[in-house]
Amino acid sequence: MKGGGGLVNDNLSQLEALLTELPTALENQSLGEELARTVQVLQTAEQQALRIAALLSIVELLDYDSDIQTEYVEDVQDEARKVGLMLEQAETAEDLKLASSRYKNELSSAISNLDRDLRQHWRNFVLQEFRPLIDVGEMLRYLGGQDDLATELTNCGRSADEFQPRSDTTTFLEKVSSLVAKRDQLQHRRKAAFGEGEVGSFINALAENRATLDMVSDEVRSWLEEKGSLHRLRVTI
Image (cartoon, rainbow, N blue to C red; front, side, top):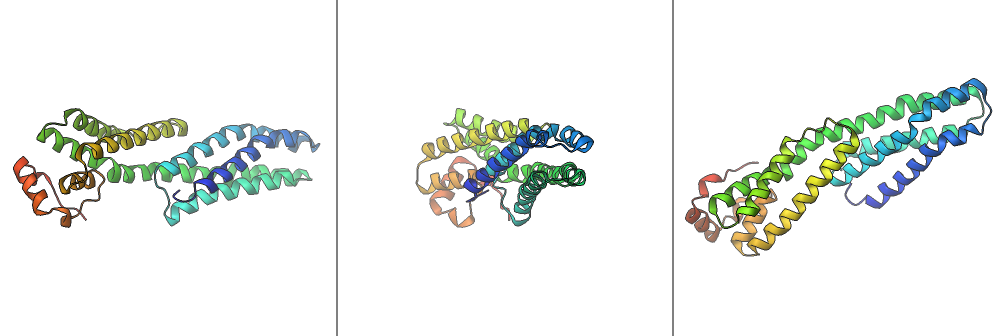
């Protein structure tokens, strides 16, 4: 989440500590059968902590920071804190029952909501950040002179476009992390290749999905016409 990386990481560390220490803490209590049932429920605590860690890492990578998206993240954090507090303060079998119920229901639901929305958000992120790489790569290949870069830009864009995050959260994180790192590396190479002139600035903006009509100066238009690429551009809002 933009501007909140430190806070997210601090919260994550607290959540991981709470979730992974809960079974041990409960074993020190003597609340009979309910204690045993609660410990059984919390056997998934480490797995849930890893899932939360992966989801929050994906949040950082995908510019996931709208109001509703922030709510999904905060729901996970709040529910984990509530479960931890309820378990720490549990004194009766009923207290444990309520805590384990919240862990199974509210916390699990909050995690699932964040996971599901991140996977949907990935498609929008691809449209904004990776689809332009395909267009720029194809245009550069058509123009010639940057064949390797053109091919890698196109392949990176298509790999992202084809990726369907239906697997586990860890694999989702690994794939997104790899694609974003490759995108950043290619964007650096592209900027170095085209410099800072009007044409270079336009190509760079086009690849970053921020090109506007006022960037099509006489120099840029002449260059596009010379390369036979003017017809390849389209206006979107």
